[in-house]
Length: 159
Image (cartoon, one colour):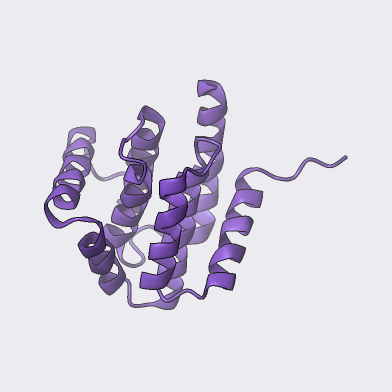
């Protein structure tokens, strides 16, 4: 199971670079927090989800952030979520991502985080709905993005 999750992590890293383009392009903090929110949606942050968050932050920060600072960043995100609650954090992320393309890329990244362990939990599905609404992504388009990300990370097997 862990080797499969590590393979999924590698595919997600490769896909994220195509979704996000150049590191530091737009809304880095909001991209990171969106990924964090999805990783935390089920109430716990698994080791593989934490590693994906660290990989995401490293990519977005162009690997200029020391590991201990990455752990601090995740701890700060946890504290902000506990203090503000889900609705406020989602609202803050959405207001930081004004560009529709950036919002869709953040949504893609959240989908990749959700799919990393191979299944979407009920809490994650609920968060997809909240993010799509906050990011003003129509439900049909949001569903299409989820399918695209799933198929990119887990290509259908030819029969």
